[in-house]
Image 1 (cartoon, rainbow, N blue to C red):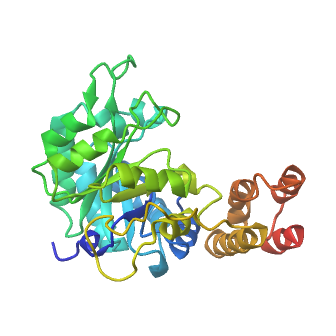
Image 2 (cartoon, rainbow, N blue to C red; image 1 turned 90 degrees about the vertical axis):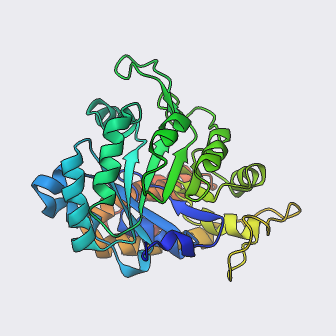
Length: 339
C-alpha cells in the first residue's frame, strides 16, 4: 500500500483519538500545531454518507495543515460502509480511514454499531473487507478491551484479543485499543496488558493504546511498561490541553529525525514536562478561537465556550473568569476578558 502514512511516522506515535463533538477541524489543527502526529475526525455515519452525504462531508472537511488526517466511520451495514468509503476517498482524500468498533455510547451501541459489533465477528469481517476493498488508503480500526456481557443488550461477552484473532488476516494496518471494556465506560482503570498482547498477535500492524492518558507522566509510564506498542491515542486528556502532545514529547525527548528502535530514546531520568502558564495557555486558546471563527463563524463562538472552560480550569479566580468566558460572543470579547 503506497499511501500508508503510518509507516512514515516516528515512534511512539501520538494520535488525537476521535471524539464526537470535540475533534472538529479547529481542534485537530490546534493539536497538530502542538505536537499531535495524526488526527482523527469525529465519528461519521456511513448511513448518512450513503443517503445524504452533503451535510456529513461538510462536517468532515479539513485543512492541509491537519494532515495526516484520518476519517472515522461508524455504522453496521457493509453496503453503506462500501459506499461511504468510496465517497470519502474520492471527495475528501484524507490520509486514512478508520472503522469504529469501540464507541460505548448508548445511542450508538443500541443501534448495533460501535462496540456492539465486537461480538459479531462475521459482520465485523464483512465491514472491514467492504472498507478495504473500496479504497487505496490505509484502513485502521478502533476497538475496546472487550464486552463483559453484563449489559442485557449485549448478551455475548468477548475480549479485544478474541476480536483481533478473528480478523488478524484482513488488510487493516493499524488498531487503536481503548483499555476499558464497554461496561467500564470512561471511568474504569484501563487494562493496557491487553494492548501489549494484541501487539504480539499482529506484530506487523500499528497498535496504539488509548484511555485514561491525562498527563505526560501517564504516557511515559505506559510506554515504559509496554515498550512494544507503537504509540498512544490521546482523547479526554487533551480537553483544554492540546499542548499535552508537546509535553509528552518533551518528557520522552523524542528525536525529530529518523525512526529508531521503539522507545529506545526514552530517558527514565527525564525531568517533568514543561508546564504551561496562563500566558502560554491564553495564546493557544485564542488561536483555537480564531480557528473556530474561521471555520464555523457564530456557531464556532458557541462551541469554543466549553473549550475555554477547560483551558482555564484550576487557575486562581478561575470560576469568575470562566463565567465570563462562557458568555462571550466573539474572539475580540474573549481577548478582552483574558486581558
